[in-house]
Image (cartoon, rainbow, N blue to C red):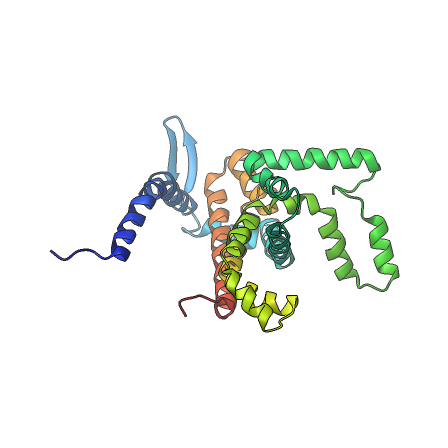
Length: 300
């Protein structure tokens, strides 16, 4: 009998490792996902026996049509959510890469700083994280006695930038990033950890060769560091996009949840959820197409 190769044995071991995840995917995720899809094509009605699913009078796509053309809030919130990704996602990824580069260096208190950046992910997430952020904002509001909902008062910075001739759009982006720096750090724990793992995996010989060749720090970053970590940039882009889409503070998520919890209109909420899910897939597809030629793999 022919002996299995090491690679084949590793592949078999890999399948055993992901079996619990596959079981959880099928049992706890796939079934509810298909149920929500079925709800979106029917009318969910509560009755004495529990609930029934009846046929929609306007066709199976009635809920989808109402969400897109008949709802004044959902399309607006959906567009705002997608537009916000254009500047939020690059800001988060750039901040995470810059922070990981600093945390990679040797300095006193490095372990403590790494723990601080990852602490929000360890402590909590989701709704509780939103409550903590709101409490922090309330503290800031009481301190500055301002109507702003951000942690830092950036009115002085805004005025200085505008007086200096900075365009209003760029000024809003910069001051918004500064005002929400606490939220930015809160969302960056996983991405920083991924970038740290990527940077620590770069062979030291690469930097030694670059130093011998006389490359500057800027050239070393773009010619050595960035190509090696580029696959992880794509991973963090995807993670940040999904995290932004599913964040509890997202306006679309709140709107859909309100129909689930308050109005108990499960059919209409399911249709909006599926539209939101398809939009997220389209955005991810565009990101993959755009970044496909920018990612360097060692096996190429």
